Image 1: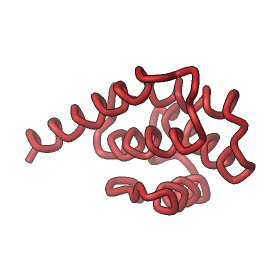
Image 2 (image 1 turned 90 degrees about the horizontal axis):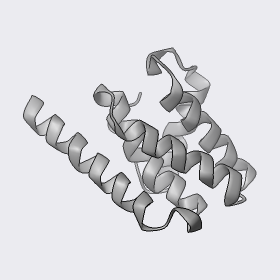
Image 3 (image 1 turned 90 degrees about the vertical axis):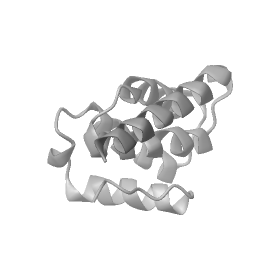
Length: 113
């Protein structure tokens, strides 16, 4: 089972890096969910090197893509979670916001509860 999880994390990291590498200058709010949700799921499962890529992209979307207030709250919550030394210490409210945002945008989480 560990091999499958490691392979899944590697695929998620490669996907995220590929998305970000394509066009960092034209990221959209939807990219925040497309990139952030898999990174959050991977982090919740076991931590991931994709964190830095996701953090950079989320910050860029927040700062350049003019996200809605709802999306900005989700982005800020996701940045808080991915920046945390222990994701389990992030508040229940923050976790709920992240889970609902990912689900609403078609990226339900498997590992964050």
